[in-house]
Each structure stands twice: as C-alpha cells, then as structure tokens.
Image (cartoon, rainbow, N blue to C red; front, top):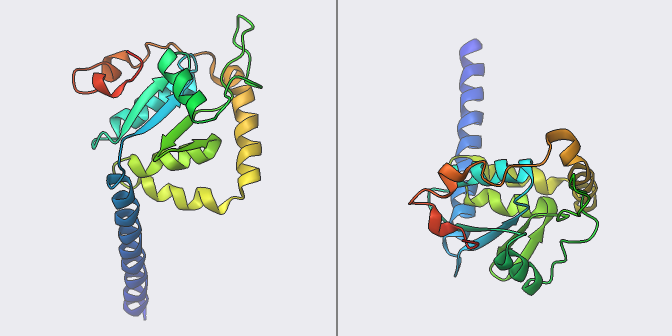
Length: 183
C-alpha cells in the first residue's frame, strides 16, 4: 500500500513539474520574442527599489531588460511618453520632496505599474521565478493595487531611503553598464 501511494504521489509531482516546465517555456518564449528590450523605471532613491534592481540584474542573464531611474531625464521622459504620471501621491523623502508612486515596466509599448509591473518583470528572470506570475494574477487587481499603494506609502518607514550607488559594482560592471539608459 505504501509503495502504491509513493507511486501516485511521484506521478502527481511529475505531472505538476511537467506542467510547470511547459508553462515556464511558454512564458519565456513570449519574453524572448519581444521586438525590443523591456525597460524597468524605478525610484533610484528607494532602498527597496535598488534592492529589486540588483536582484533582477543578477537573475536576468538573457539581458532582456533595460533600466532607468525615474529621477533621470531618460526615466522621466519614458514615463511621460508611456502616459504614466509617477510624481503624484508618492511617499515623502526625508527632505520633504515627493517620491515616485510606482515603478514602471514598459514592454512592447505597454506600461505596467504597481504589482502588474512586478508580475511583468518575473518572466525575464532565470530559474523558476517566472512561475510566480500565476499566483500574482489570482489576486484581483484592485486588491493588488491596495496592497502595493499601502506598501509604497510606508516603504521608507520600513526600509529607509536607498543609496543610489548601493549595487553600483554589479550594475555598472562592464557587462551590465550598457543596460542602464540613464548614464
């Protein structure tokens, strides 16, 4: 009886793994078939945003993403051209100025914001990270936005402001330098 249960469980795990691998291949083929690289616009003064960029840089070996700080002229211009106003309703920096209210991923001419931007970044990552897209989309969009807005408003209280040069060694290394559009 135990050996039958082991076989059933193993078959279930094998079927789940095969389905996950097929989903992963489908997700990756959509990213690899893009006409131009996607661009991640981020708050260069935010600790969470800087950590995220470093995390993504280290896991995007196919270099399908480009990066620009929303504080740079290039980042501001791309956000404006995409029709995204990131400069209203953001958290306040220590000096009292307003921070961007969201990160933005521009992909195939479409601007993704809040957790939709994070979900759109996942397929660009190595390993099994792209599979996290599925659970993110199970949560209704308005709830994702409520959570994201709450977190974004409190991020400096939780993690402080970020050092824009925090991952400079990785981000500005010879093989990654050209991925940044705000040089």
